[in-house]
Amino acid sequence: MGHQGVDIPDFVSHRNENEERFRESPYSEFGYEEPVPPKKTISKKQRNKTYGRVAYLFSALFLSMIGYMIYFQTVKTEELNRNPNNSKKDAQEEYVVRGSIFSADGEILAGTNVDEDGVETRLYPLGNLFAHVVGYTSKGKSGLEAIYNNDLMTSNQSITDKVASGTQNKKEQGNTLILTLDTRIQQAASEALGAYKGAVVVMEPSTGKILAMVSKPDFDPNNLDERWEFLTAEDSQSPLLNRALQGLYPPGSTFKILTALEYLREHPTDYQNYWYECQGAFSQDEVQIKCYDYEVHGYEDLQTSFQNSCNTSFANIGLQLDCDQFAKTCEEFLFNSKLPTVMPYSSSQFVLNGKSSYGEIMTTAIGQGDTLVSPFHMALITSAVANDGVLMYPYLVDRVENVDGVLVKETKAIPYKELMTETEASILTDFMVSVVQYGTATRLSGLGYTVAGKTGSAEYEVNGNTGNEENFSTHSWFVGFSNVEDPDIVVSVIAEDGGTGNSAAVPIAKAVFDAYYAMQYN
Image 1 (cartoon, rainbow, N blue to C red):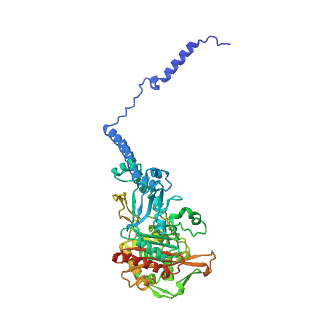
Image 2 (spheres, one colour):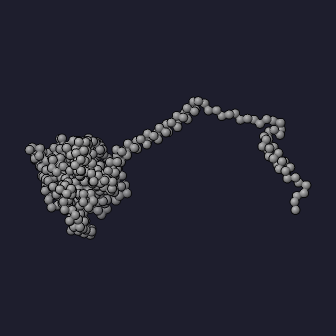
Image 3 (cartoon, rainbow, N blue to C red):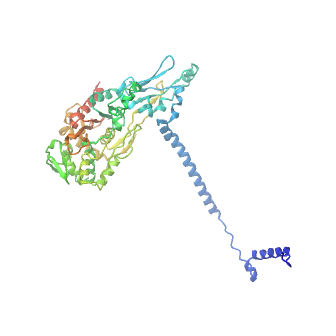
């Protein structure tokens, strides 16, 4: 039933009137005019300031974008090119013959032979000698072959030669790598290491050039395919591993360079007052530290403790150090950090902290415990001592040339980091000189050149049964540099199971030093 007496159009009309009424200002009901708020005005100065901020923001974004593009082009692109997993790098194989690799003294280390049918074979004329550093190109790529793959597969031949190659339907010739490695020093180091497993690293502390890098056991990259199964077997003794960069060892007494440095830093004005009476052994909380063969050194200061490689004195020194500060120093020296190299490497380890036990502190102070380091890293530390505290960026490739010998790019010697002050380096040098003159490396004294060095004997478990000396073996270490007043080269040696530093590593280092100076005199 509908609503009688109600006119729907009138109802709608009233509703609209009410809506209009409520839309009016409440002030009008009382006879007042609604106050009008003042209009907000922005001054020209404020507008310019706002526009300036917006312009600055867009400028910053634009510059950031340009900066990243430059970074990508100069840094990231080089990293991508050197990444062995980058599948795009070998796209040039259809057009370019892989370039050659030469030593600093002009010996060819890797080259590509092309037969009459155009079949290419990568050859390594010196076989095992440079295997780990130069690397290989079958079964994947390794070493410099992998890292500088883009350079070797890029041709910077002249336009004329490129046109000639194109008209003759021949490939262009890739660029050439000229290394810093010297075959004479490499050969001497390899022969001196002999049958020992281990590594030798030789570098110029003033430039960062690496003159030799030997790792044993080694392999012949010329027959890699045929021997791959043997080389990768579990019982093969890891011949593909570059022990110079990837081998981690307890540093033994070579680590006393850093322990002594930390004591110098914590006792800058009174380190010369340090003294200790060595009785051959030292115990703290049931942990015993002994000198080699329980030798009694008697009264020693800091220098003679270092000279005699006195374990008991350095264990005593370790207990006096601030462990957190010691850890900070070691991290400044690149422990638990990245190392400055493009080559694959293993990071060195240092785990001491303020909560460490007395036993952990004492063993760490003498280079044992959980501390691990590579021969390459010890060469870097020694180079900083030799170079007045400054570590130069180490490098293996001196320059890249095109096939005609025209320079494409070269490596410049640049400082990497100041690891210690010149004064600290000088004190440590004096300590290392005393090791050669009166201490554990006297085989290196009285030669036609001067040497500063540090030996090391690093124990490790063989059979996993602690407490029995028969279950331990000893690695032989030496690190040092020659021509002390104006250092020429740094040598770092590890001979696995070689015994004391003086018995194996020192003679190896001497052979390297002799070979270097024989080159200079000839």
